Length: 68
Image (tube, rainbow, N blue to C red; front, side, top):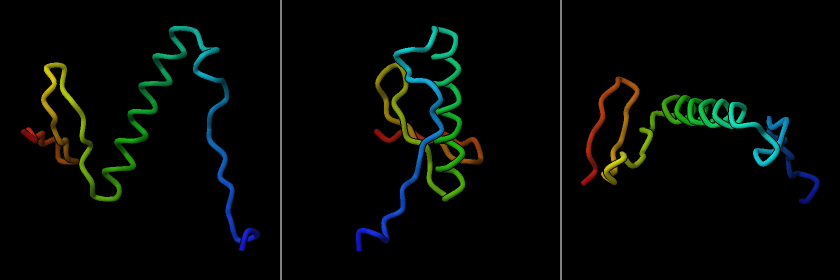
């Protein structure tokens, strides 16, 4: 049973704590884009909070719905 486990390695090259401010900003941007692309690929919306604290769901077609 344990031999059936699959190990998946990440794509991190450098720890966020060791990144410069520019590298960290780029890493955050790419992480957000990867998560968004993955969710849209499986038919799910990206759910997040706007700056005013309102939860919203963003869909592949660009539609954004308030969840309040």
